[in-house]
Image 1 (spheres, one colour):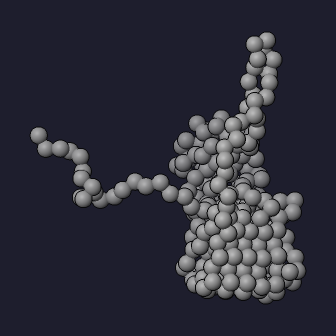
Image 2 (image 1 turned 60 degrees about the horizontal axis):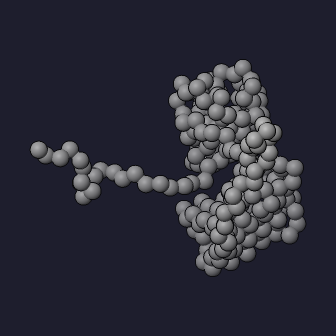
Image 3 (image 1 turned 135 degrees about the horizontal axis):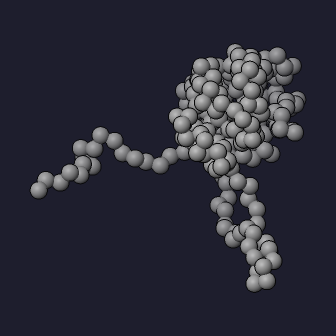
Amino acid sequence: MASSAVSDASAAFQLKGSSFTATVLELQSASLTEIKTQLAARTLDAAAWLQQSPVILSVEKVAESAADWAAIVALCQSFGVSLVGLRAPKAMHEALASVGLPVLASLRTKSAEKTYDADGHRVAVEPEQKPVAAATTQVITQPVRGGQQIYSSGDLVILAPVSAGAEVIADGHIHIYGPLRGRALAGVQGDTSAQVFCQSLEAELVSIAGRYRVADDLRSDSHWRKATRLSLSEDMLNLYDL
């Protein structure tokens, strides 16, 4: 009997694990009117970014709202937002099953596990501490050209310009000893203490731990085309003289 399995040599595709950076669009309101108004204003300066990059729609902060989730998804898509999934509490997963997008679990904050002793009293058990490999700093000496993407699991130091259309990504800080004309995303694993430093701020987009500002917004700031440090404060991306 002939085997029905497809040999590796003739396979039309392979399944491989991978990772990528996604923008999180976190809803603060479930009102269609409010979302539409603010999307209309926001996508004027962020349209290219939202259409070219994968976006996760987070409904965690509005989970208790009586909302038309399918309509909200359709509204975002009508503005060209490239939604690839939803992030929601587990209790919402069934209600979101018909929306047509994968539903991801909410991010959990690391904390001690809760358990009970023989007398029924709850006690805290500290999770096992696993050794973490030290993050390394990656140093790039050549210009980062349009279409290139560079990622570092630690800090990223670039001793040359970052061109328009290029993307530099780091789990830690990003230091650019030249003009930043492309996109820079620091703290992509959620490190809110990460910062971005550049000798001339001319970026298409700068992001720290998912909070971002785009070119039209940055151009109106006094730091445009100046040496700048960017960091998060009270969940806002702020600019400072370098």
